[in-house]
Length: 343
Image (cartoon, rainbow, N blue to C red; front, top):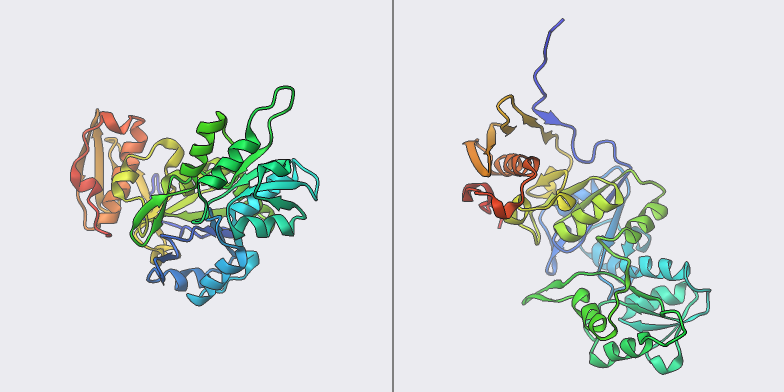
């Protein structure tokens, strides 16, 4: 009998043992009008259900499903979990069916309100019982003003419920990053001096909606943004996989705070079903992934061995830096650790 055994070079694949995959859309499934290479094939290959979870509040689940189908994915509206769905689920716990709700947003919100039996208005003069806010490209100053009028504090009355779909400060569009729902919510917040309850990532209601829909909490979150996908997964108590086909790059990964650190880092979804390289902490305190090795000397990250795989070097660097518990602004990190090979 051996007195010791070497740590295996690989752990099971990220999807091994899961009962549900939750996939973000933009930056994971598609970028612009087309599918990201390999994403459709890998998600269709899944032997467990795939839920498509999105903060985008401007489109209905049916429209999202039709887009995914056009890319070749086996997706139905029931597979799409949206922030408006999560917002309306929160609303249903607050108000009885038939209540009148002021909407700031588009079809994604109004469709879910109607399905849940709520009435909606665009005017504060109709004395709505709550305000629900989500992004739509047609939202303008008048819509934000109506929300502020409805939410204005009235002496002797409880504050009107205010639910926002998500906090995303930006949205990616063809010409670059544009202001997102968080920016629009901030405008109303400035006027009324309070914040709404948020339903979408990184808050947990959208994850709870997905768990209830698919009947399991044994899920893996697949995303490209640390502040929504990874942070939301950690808050919901599920593991997460960061894919380098979208917004957050190696530099952001190296600097990720504890509440945003993914369990897996992959270059693309081609690695989704493959064994995952094991992370090993050696006796000298260095961290090794494959043959890449990184050690922390106090506040200095040292590359002991670059290895033959940039993604393994990134994984080793992240693991070593994250384990140090030190804030990134106090560290010296060589550029080779966060060089972006995947643009």
